[in-house]
Image 1: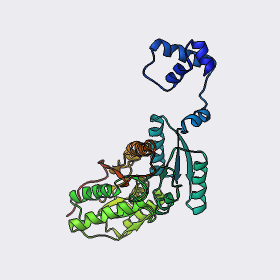
Image 2 (image 1 turned 120 degrees about the vertical axis):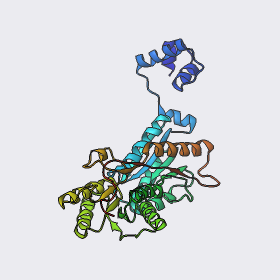
Image 3 (image 1 turned 60 degrees about the vertical axis):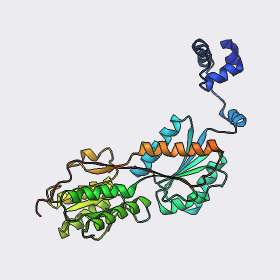
Length: 332
């Protein structure tokens, strides 16, 4: 930094102001400093800066099963929001959840002296693991169930399921079947709750629940079972990947969508509009989840608090995207 100041003909403090984006620097001075930085190939020493500020400007993220669209999109939204706020992100992604690997992930991030931590915790066990984060570290849980000792940012899964189920009832279907995600996932639990509550409030029969595992194969097997008994006229599928498999099974069985059966998915993956037929689905705003979770975490960091008197649960509303996979029933 001293070399940059010497070449630019300014003080060390002026270089610091330019690097920190301070507004009280003349444009001509800023240009000279930036030119000197380019000439020297100068890069800030973040470790040295951390010693002075006691901040690393790094946030830790523990993510679970990022091979799936929801967790992967949530992670991307958090990364983008952190970058926009001027923070780096250190990520530990876990395929499976055990006490040992969760503790190792938390220890790894804590050893890096991250300023705060976000845990993408869509599973019941993952949400419970967040409580083991060291007490001195600000932490926010994403999709972490109800707020307790840790603030939570989550898409309203119950509301999303209500949108899907009510849409099918409003079209005139007598009831709605549901292919759910794994029981240990909080999102699957919320979507099942919203589906069942909507049917009960409408006085509609509640069909037996079909459990899947988020995969297209699970949707395919569910579709074959539904095609075999020919009872369903409308199906709410717990995610778009399972809906893809279900659509194939129905097509193979000679069942037309939406003429014979209407189908709604959940997530609005980029491919959903190119399914055959284009899929009606519930869209989650992962970018907003990222912004809200980073904003909440930075509030905790700036306040010097690891929590709040009343822990928050910020809810991001979903939206229904109507396409060609749903229609009124052809017979009453």
